[in-house]
Image (cartoon, rainbow, N blue to C red):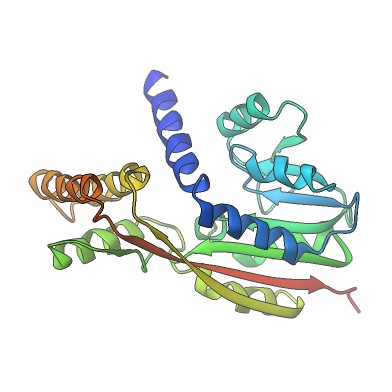
Length: 254
């Protein structure tokens, strides 16, 4: 149990490090704009994690519901945002009534899903006619990291991607929405650049996962992380992440 708690705390720290970056805040704001929510409209944030987006959507006058598959993560969300509506649920079985919400948002979720079509069918079920869905995520094959050892960096990035259920889901978001029957589908990309030490836990986690998968050994992991730490100390760290956003409208089924 202590080990599970430590892993959850480490995950929350990594998420906080990413979410606190100015670019991440701007991307969340863009996702809220794409929802085009009327005042007081209901919206579901699928994979809500620690609840930041739920709190921000409430601050914009919406009535958000945060849904997550992790009871531990929901406990963090409820502690941070006690006024929020947080519910345990799966992206393919949302704890919401038919046509209840005007907006559906899923950020960094679809790379975890083996059956994205089922999740989007569920999105259409809970969306009112004319409701909008917004999907956002990163492509796990396209971490761009400056390093003195590009071959090793390439190996660990792809090794980490291979551990993800659907590492290239983000590049498929537009087509997934079209296939699910959404209309007026729009896609865009924003590349976030990170250059400070706040990203070191993310990079260290990337290397640790590659070592655990057997793609690199412990000495390679230690040397690579040490290089990234030196880069951070001398203002030479560079990490770029292309983040893909797709949106679409759920029309009445005819």
